Length: 197
Image (cartoon, rainbow, N blue to C red; front, side, top):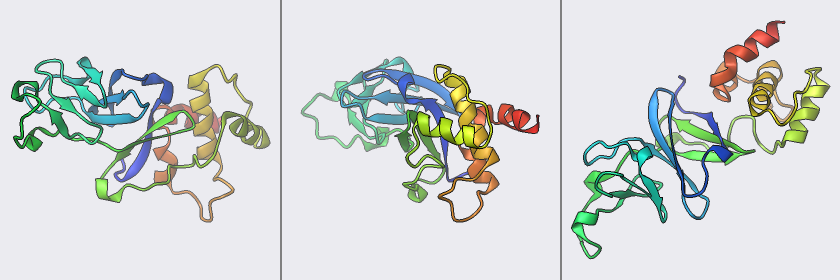
């Protein structure tokens, strides 16, 4: 994959409040979770203590909790609590921090930053202010038959088609191959096949 890009990895509704979803994306095992405030976090799916899969744990407050010894990690991967140490412990537990990945949501899609954390950009690829009705209008304008909105797979495919076939009107320069590939790598081959028809 091309580093330092945003990649669409899941629909937003796949990660419900106070739940954890374990996925493999971009050859990485990830745990995505949504705290009780609705904020989403993404950490590597492995506890730093004994290597347990964090995706098998639970969400506790603002943290993801390891199913083995109960270590808790916030959205930044910081180890916030170790039950064996007790609540009043003042020990430095930063050595137990887990790797976290920046994630953002836009138009019901979760985007994952694949690359150096210091190079994270605020702008997500191609998705400035689009809604499903806007997407359908844009597809109709360029002559792509729209697919029922109820089909989430086809909706993602439509987004891919739109991003591969035409650059957005707001862009001042042509889209690079890297930008076009970054939106929906999972369905890119289907989109390219349909483009050639």
